[in-house]
Structures are given as structure tokens and as C-alpha cells.
Length: 565
Image (cartoon, rainbow, N blue to C red; front, side, top):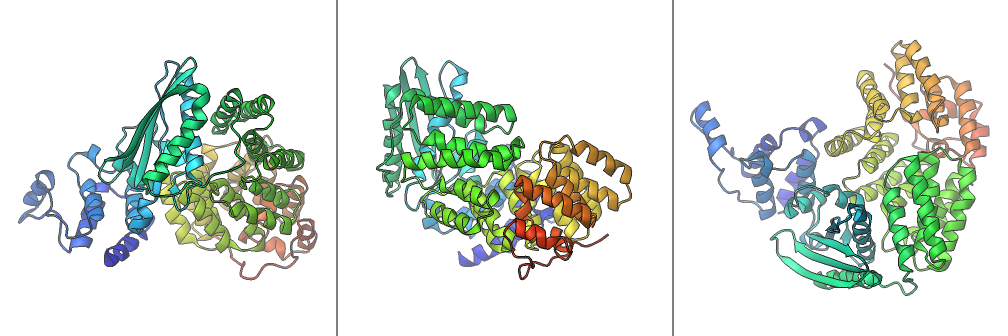
């Protein structure tokens, strides 16, 4: 098995073009690598084609998990194969994990809404998410984050395929039927390898018993997997109307639209008014305030005291939940530039048994101002491990790798992201950064164009694209983009990035100072990056560094040059 794992790791390091190749062809290559012979053989080309169409290759003398992966790749019917190379890669990565680690892993799928009212989907989703949160407190259990587990909503429920994609051994699925004041919940824990039910149960209860149902399900799963659920002695059972308002807030918080976030904030306030002792809506409201700085352009100095108030109230109500400390760490870093205080808060957050992917993301940002890009990338990898189908996290990981000079690794992560979805801005923008760092300006331009097209109101993509156009002699279009950027809700970093990339240091320093004054998060994040190298060597830098409480000289080992066309 060790030899097979080494072979798999070599396959996983293939360049992006191979990672996006045809699933069937890749299966044939994998078969030959593992067996030393071709999967389909014939004495003539026609005979070989006939074998491909009609015959199954001889059984592999390899671990069963590898045989199943190859068989799915080579299935005769396209619908029976892996549907994307992202699924193949995830299955191969999981095959390199030890059997013990595989057994202690679970994905909770969105519970089916069996109620007559389709609008109750927020309730069935919320129940599944609450169970995810409870299972996150099971010692030594890997729990897939909501974004990745819920990516299979509305798709054919092939449990084995889902488990292979998410890299888990067990899957929980269920349904919710709500009628008046009654609720029926069914849940099944399935071993993905053989399809057998490890546990199943049906609950017919009053709506107000929903909290006991959640606890019973989590305890039953922990027992079935022979693990222990860590209890929270301060956990409060909220009034049901407050709980329902919180579920609605979470539902709207998943949509990156200003109006959806406004509704989420309002539902949080409703939950707090309905049950002042309920900690969860305070923590969620603090998170929404933090996200509003990037989603709607609210100034960090405006929301920083709001975040602190909500998080501190959440911690007063539930001191055993250390997760909200990462929000205090983010405020200390992004608003106060109080780096020791940020470190203390993040240490408290990271001590939790259930660190969310968002906390790893925020923590990663705090390593970057000091040029500690390997550590920042490591934190983003942890976010990706928890939420493997999040295109945003993979795109952010790419950006961290670029800043650390790990360009080939960044490209590999980018191809994984695009296998999942091509509609987000993050991987395309990170591709543009990577290609520019490698001196491949035409490819950088194509990626920047796609990033701008996917989210034109995001100034980062606009500023980067405008700078590339200047390099290629298209100054008129670049000027038009800069005028367009003025209407963006967050224009400052895009404008600073543009001047940095164009080596216009006086203008870059002016816009960088505006970033610092506005507490734009990218000001400290990029302070020791390849983009600010020229600025750090200029007379302007001392003042800017002091404003961020950073050293006035570059951190060791942070000199990376952007190759010029």
C-alpha cells in the first residue's frame, strides 16, 4: 500500500493540464501505472477500439480502494463515471489517507424538506447545519463543512460518489416534515464503502423538541463511530421563535448580496430580542458585520465596535464557545493594528475543538504582514481541508501561495478550483497573479479579464486588469476601467494595486495611505508582498509602515520579483 500511495502522490502532482483531462483517459493511464500493462489490448487498432467499447480490463492487483477508483473512471456508461476531474482527484487524495483517519470522518448532507411549504427549506437546512456544529465537537472526528456537504443538493444521491469526493467514510442523510406544531425527522448514518446503515432513527415530536432531536442524533452518531461527543455545559436551549429566526439569518447569510446580508442582520436582531440569553445570534451578527466590510464596503472603523460588542456578549452568554474569539482577533489586526492582541485572540480561537474554516482564513491573514507566507498558506490549507468544495477558499489559498513564491503549487490549486466552478472571481484573479509573477503576461491578461467579467464591481480585478492593459499598450481602456472603478463599493485597494503594478510610486503611496486610514484589510496583508517591493524601497514606506505598526524594513525572505514582459 505504501508503494501505491507514493504512486498516487506522484499522480496528484501532475500539472494542471493533466488534472483537467478526460476521466476515462485518465483512468486508463492510472490502470497502466498501477498494473504495468494496458487496460485494453488488441492485435490491431480496430481490435483495441472494440475492447474499449465492449470489454472490462483484467482486475487490478492493487488495494480495493484503488480498484474502485479505476473501475469508476473506466465505466462504460458516462453517467457511471466520476463527473469531473475534481471528483477523481478528491478520491485519489482520500486513498492516500490512513484507514483509521478515513473511518473517523463524516459529511452531513442537506436534509430533504418534505413539508408542503417549500419555503421551509431554511428549516431543514438549519437542522442539518446544527448537527454539523454539534458533530464538530466530537473528538477526533473530521466533519466536512456545510458549503461542501450542501454542494450535492438536488443531485442524485450516490453516497459512495459523494463520500469519495469529500474524502469521508460516513455520510448522514435525512429528511424533515413540518406540519403545524409537529415535526418528523428521519436520519440515516451510512458507511459509504459498503452502503450499509450504521444507524437510523425516526423522530415524531413537537417542534419545541427540536433541540433534543439534534442532541440525540449527534450522540447516536458519536456512539456508532465509537467516539465521544464533548458536551458544552453552558449551552442554552433557546426559545423556539428565536431559534427559527437564527436559521433564517443563516439562510440569508449564505448569499453574497447586500440585500441578503441586510435581511440576515435583521433576523439576528429578531432572535436576540426574542431570547436575550441566546449567544449564537450575537456571534453570527458579529460575523456579518465583519463580512460587510468586503461585501458592501462598510468602513472597518465603523463596524469594529459593533463586532466587539456582539462577540463579547456572545462570550458572556456562552464562555465555553471559543470560536468567536477569531472575530476579536480579526478586529485587533485589521482595525487596531494591535498585533500582540490579535495573536492572543487567535490562540484562544485555535484552541477550540471545532475551528471553523472562516477562523483559519482570518488567522492566515495575520501572518502575511510579517512575510510569514508559508504559515499563512498552511492555515488556508486547513480551511480547504474542512471545506474542500469551496472555490473561494481554494482561490484565497492560491493567492497566499503566490505571495510565498510557490507559483506551481498555486496553479495546481487553481485547476482544482476551476474543476469545481468557473463562476467565482477568486481563482481567476489568483491565476492572473500567478501568471504575471511567472512573466506569462498574455495568460495573466486572459485570467484577469475573466475575473473582471465574473465580478466587475470588485475593484481588485479591475485594478489588476487595468495595470496589465497599460503594460500591453491599451492605455485608453485602462483609463476607462479606472473611471468604472470609482463606482465600486471598495475602490481603494484596486486603485493602489494598479499604481503599484505600474510602478507609479507616488500615486501608489497616496492610495496606500488611504487604505490604511480606511482600515482596508489588504493594506497590512500586502505590506511585505512582492507587489509592494518597490514601494518598500522608496522614501514613502517608513511613514506607511509606522501607520500599520509594522517594521520599516522588509521582513527576511520576502523579496519576490514580478517578471516584466
